Image (cartoon, rainbow, N blue to C red; front, side, top):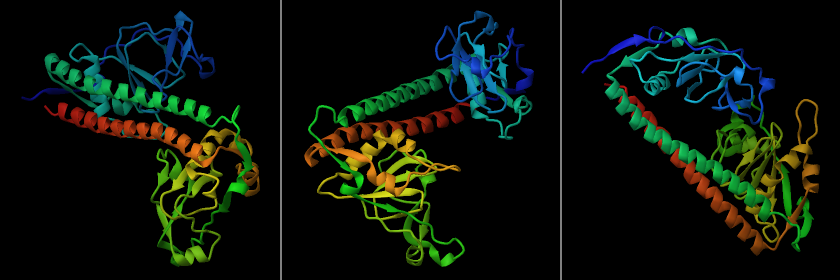
Length: 363
């Protein structure tokens, strides 16, 4: 069975009354009516002024003319800032089917330019309304599962933060307090000369801060680049043992991981080799996560802030007995493991949705 196609620009209804757009500094954290703009979040803020509400039929699809972000909006809303287009298809298309079609056919990124002229040329498949309804129902079920999974991820983050503050709070506990330098050896990283090819593409793992951006796991087992023995020996880089806590000390301050295998780092790290008789390395990992903002506040520098080895070594850490440290680590790790499972589920659901979306539109 074949179906006709039409250009998006030929199947749109006229938009309803669009009040003046709301400036970003007018967004409120709470209010009667949500503000929708072209940013990543579905709702960017709130307002109370009813006169600012979009007056037209719902639902509609909001398109970010600069960002290319698509949003399916089925509730009263106000326009946020500039750069959004309101798309409402003619009655030959179900609004949600129309939205899913656009998700499947993203506009090529032209940088920070307006993209609607390209979007208007998108060809829209037009099956019968009955078939559109079947496709929407199938995709909605997966989308709902994604929504529930995302909610669980958020809950796990909230639980982790609550537990982190509770378990590492020394108030009312007879915990010894020591300086970092008394319970761990702090080492710097380094970078071999990039002009000497013999120093690179060896077998020694070499980590940079950017590799920890968005890194969700506790332990890291590989790096993007490797250095050679010569590179290690002819630079300030050092090879740190398995279990070393790796903490970015600049650009930015505060990314944390544990070396799952021996590795070196560049100079953007302060690396902690714990005295295992006093300090559990995973306990230190969680302590550094708890104190991230505090440690960032200790950074110095005009071009970019950096926390020095001397300052890090002077940071005080409350130390329960090793047995208690391990119990705390076990509790916090359990929540982290649960979140890891949810993130894996998120990835699987995305694959399922993308697959179902693609197959549904091949009719």
